[in-house]
Length: 454
Image (cartoon, rainbow, N blue to C red):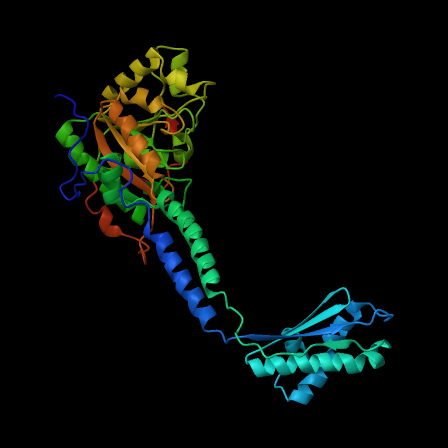
């Protein structure tokens, strides 16, 4: 049978003709304009709603012979005692501290300018006159200095101060545009969680075969430690799906590879082998991930000997048996200094191509695609590839690159399995129905029964 780059996806998998990574509307162009419009309207409304402010000005001349510096007169003009007197005389409903915010006193040599702000021209004029007169009368008593001289008459202001509504509005719009552009860029390039059914088909042109919930026990296979859990049920469903594809394609060896090291591909490979073994088939599980081997740890097997023994002998590495389960396991063995070089040697590739013939089905755990290109070499020894991606951490760029790298091998790609998928809400403590169709359940604990065949 001629090999095809892809197996046919399940019938219920939606078709997405797009193969590019980003849609044309990915850049959220409307974000900066929406923020600018909202900021401009709010700023203009707030500034325009404020009351008009009128400012009156009075000027005093300090006698040259005064022993007090002009700054002493300006401090007197804004003193609490003087302002309290003005409040009583004008019967104002305010406090000295609040009134001080509306009074400014500046000096330029011997000239003292007093400015008073108020919501009406008349009140602004009265404040400026009252404060000036109070300084003139209080200076001899409070400062022991000659009184300053009033310069001219204090006129009532004709126009209110500009509220700078256009300036404030323009500044708010400009700031909102900058913030909006930054926000749009973040939204455009953020790594949003990928949706299994649609985004995988869209990004990598691959169907989704299953979603495995995150396991509560990361150190033991779910099919052994939690055989009735939702993740165990999802893994058995995955096995059933692959079984259908395997029957259609007559697959003998499946390569399980993750996008990166966080995708739990080793756990998926171990649990998938256990799920196939539950059906009574003779399974061979090979840990070919010489970068981060995990099969021996998950199955609690010794790892002194394994696949890397092929460096020193032409004999097949020893396969360890799991009592009560038709599953043989070849662990990684002692790790070499250059794993990728070892996996690319003709001796090891020939061995990996021959080992699946000793079982009805062989499952190989491969190094992740981000860390090593060894998966492309191992793909040549297998009949099909199963890609594992993390439902929470896999980046779109990495997923697309993974699909391209695997397609380049020319081997059929079964599809994508999502690890660490969200656990179902209100999940039951057990799910006995998921086991009713199984030929023989796995033993509850195999840690004390591991043996190694020579």
